[in-house]
Length: 67
Image (cartoon, rainbow, N blue to C red):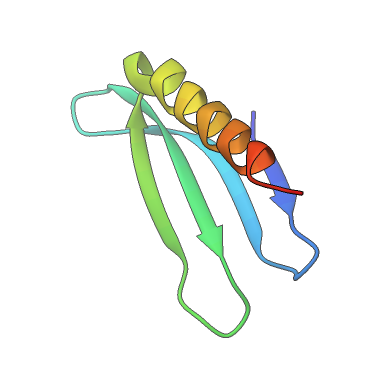
C-alpha cells in the first residue's frame, strides 16, 4: 500500500513500506519537489505513532497561532 499527497505547489509526498537489511519493515517517507532531488526518511514501525503525534501537535500549535 502506498499513500501519496500533492500540495498546491506541486510538491509530492509518498509513504511506502520498505524492507531494510534483515527483513525489517519500515515506512519510507519520500518528498519530491520539482527542480530538486528527492529526500526520503525511514521510520521504524514502532515509532509511527510518535511521528503522527508530533505532526498533530505541530498542527495544533500552528492553528492556535493564527488570527
